[in-house]
Image (cartoon, rainbow, N blue to C red; front, side):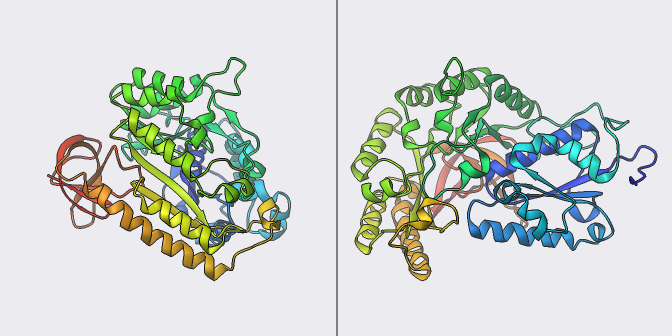
Length: 448
């Protein structure tokens, strides 16, 4: 028997999101679907009529964290009293029907491929009929960046993530994404443009374009297109909005894309390129391509076209077959100081992947020790690159203030959530201020 939501009150739904920015974008999309169907969106899971946990299951530690979050949500007083709990995202996609036997606390499961059905699933879980009778006129933008509730949309943060594709065709030997998300499929230009437009109208100042493999956007269309065409079109249509591209594989750094970055002032000269390793043999075992020499030439090519480029990469240590000598080669590469930011991850042996069956598995303690050693090397190599920004003038988007009142924001050389912030003497959230960098402390900057 369905719940009775009397009068004008609409059933409310709250989200708990685990994992990366792509999951945040998925949550935003589901929130938007619910808002369009007439549901209210709650910030506090403990006060909502229903709770959705959007899970990550990329590696085992992420799965464990997601399971813990599901149990935490199941223990909320409102859920214990009958508020439905829905488990969405990567875990249902990866583990399928087996999950229902393990997580009996959940009312429903929603894999990645069915997330657009969230309103139907939620209506069924709450025992209400669609469409709800009081759908609001001020609907949340498709991407869901808005936090404006009854009074219409307003941007919660000055940036928003927009997915330009889903899935992956690379089948790296360590990765579960193709089995979770399916084959690569680009979203159309019209879909991406519409979502960007909604965010901009809500006051967002920076759009972060994300995907499992952003550089392949448009290749799968009947009339193929390219990331360069997409970014160029958006940059010209939204000239006052920063555009940033993340998760750009080495092959995606084309001459056409370099031209777009060089020619558009609102496209962040920022290159997030996951290399994963530099030894050709390890890369082949990962089902990837490249080598140290090729990557050095790639960096040189980028800087020759975009001299002020900011470079980020991610690296995996402890992959099967990585000897101490090969690890030292990786350290030597990072010590060159080619990258402003380096993310380091110990290899995670994932059931069902080819890498899990390879010989030469590295001890867990050794992987953790190597990861910390490489992080220390990366910090030492990156600090001088960050410090070299002292004296430069930069535009900074104001994001907010810390508890002590210190205002902070980000420059184009700082991606959201991963690259530190710039501390500011003044400014209002969403405002773009011009400052001179007066000092740095590792990855943080101080604007004057």
